Image (cartoon, rainbow, N blue to C red; front, side, top):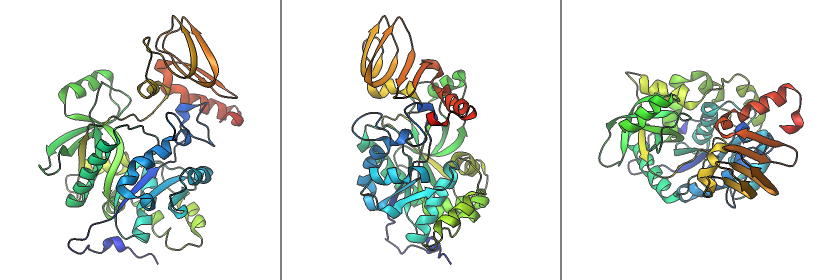
Length: 377
């Protein structure tokens, strides 16, 4: 039987260890045709020498060490994850038999910590973000970790908005928590992706932050939140790490009945809305640069642009062309008289897309699947 060591009280003065949990289970369908089922976005080198996954881990290692990194991914990608992260212990790559969104992913890692460690501060981050100001990120996470420990709260990082963005969720800040934890507030409300008019109002008001999807909390606290607000997941995953043998079978059985739901919707929003709850949700205002690399349309911020607003990886010849986004590392691309166009070249497929339709690239994968063209997925 699994022992819930996290329920034991910590001795006075004892500091909890920190673990980074990297969520690497996404498929990156908006980055087709470079992102495919076998090698999704987080395993690609979109910018720089490292893949998005490698860059994410390297940013967090100064806070946690390689032996305190957990990566949650699919069975299809587990070998590649281990190859890309040879310093992460093999047993720290937690394999989901089926992708079920972020809530089960986080619950799985929290159960692993409860079984193997007892309790720990969890820094939870997606594997596919780009953050260049790494030291400011770490400073913000240190504040969040202190806050999560001092108040037994669920903490998220809120990004200072630079524009009226309709593609992100927003966090409405409430009361300031204390002077010790700079820029920290209790969350008043979560807002889903707004209209452009509403996004302008959020940015002008100064009380709304972009929802980064980066979280910090104690494993024991998020487990308690799951038990209260997502009991089906909590019950299904209880004891899956209790013995080395039969682990895959237990996970398959558990995941077969799990809902596909995000931690924001399943846990963070209900905790915030509850009038009486043993825990609260806090947000730390983050001022580091941040890009969730949500689509090809986000790449100009990462790659940079020429005088006409064209961003490219590879060689391009733009003639009376503005606002183009081109990924073609192997073949020259000439563009004549086009505006706000995305062109992505790969060995067996070519994407041409209006820049304002970048989010709709995911529909290509859905159509390919329906037509049985699985070799392109």
